[in-house]
Image 1 (cartoon, rainbow, N blue to C red):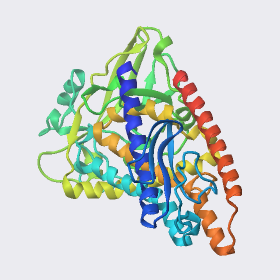
Image 2: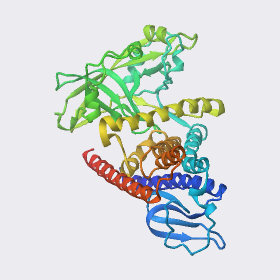
Image 3: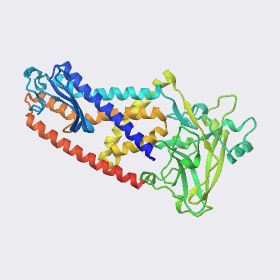
Image 4: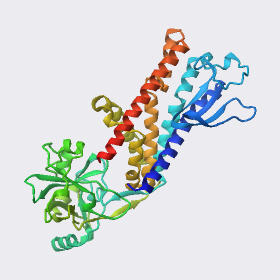
Length: 457
């Protein structure tokens, strides 16, 4: 990652987080104003004040503080004490947050997460409708229907060098090289990782490997070898979907998780790497099923590359960057699939904390480091999708019943409603302080982890 990428990523994450936090707190402020709660301050960030202004004749200060990792709205009666800069204006006790009915307090407390969730939905839709989607020589649907047309699953790739010659030499009558597409077996590994070959031989090893495609970019044409990693084949049985696509071996999942792939840096010059990839022909007439097409019109392509000076040479297979606008109807369809997928991923991410600890979490450093790759594999559409995902993530996170978060305030309100007793403001303050301290410690631990991982990579 060069300096410009780092600088742009920092600017982007500051803008994204600034907008998400500002609107979250604006949700609290707007709902509090609707119910006539006196608000002392609307602040973005914590710590020393950088900007602290109040319009003449108004009651609420608008502040920008040094540490932009959150924000708050300070309301009368919330903490049981007045802020230091309070000017002594007499406030009617009816404007205290504690004087409001439980249902009004609850609406004020959930207003921020509601804004974040709705904003997330809007941002994901913008990513689908307002920007082109990028694919790299393939387009996969979520489920394989063996009766569906092959064109529903793939879009053409381009080839160069020996690959083009091979296709032309082996094409059946009535086929041209442009009629063939790469059969990328499965996208069920992780993120943008795709299994492209389940049978790879490296001349200085007795193991059988699998080739996994990790595109550095989907915005430009790129040669295969620049984005492929080789893992020792594992013992996991392929799924029925994968078997339908001809997959017989999968990468060792443990090695993928640990980032242990074959490194050519120490391989002797002349080491050969052989990949077997499938090509499928699309006839100019007719609409055969995917299964029929795969069974009857498939070419098994063997490509060879040679290692020179510790680097893998070209395979001669060029993946074409494909840009596509979804249009109104398809954008809604994509949105209806993206939103459940995003929510499901967030829930799984929170659940994984209890099984994998903080290794499954990323903080500001990890998010910033990931932004250039996110942009490279989808441009502005992926950035807006990422911002939407982050906004929904903030909504889910803030709903957790942990001291200092909105979910905790909501729990306190419900307890007070059921028990008919007020939780002392001092107790609430102590619990919030402990919660913020623990969250700060967690944030520091995650940041250290992210920095260490950057150097390990």
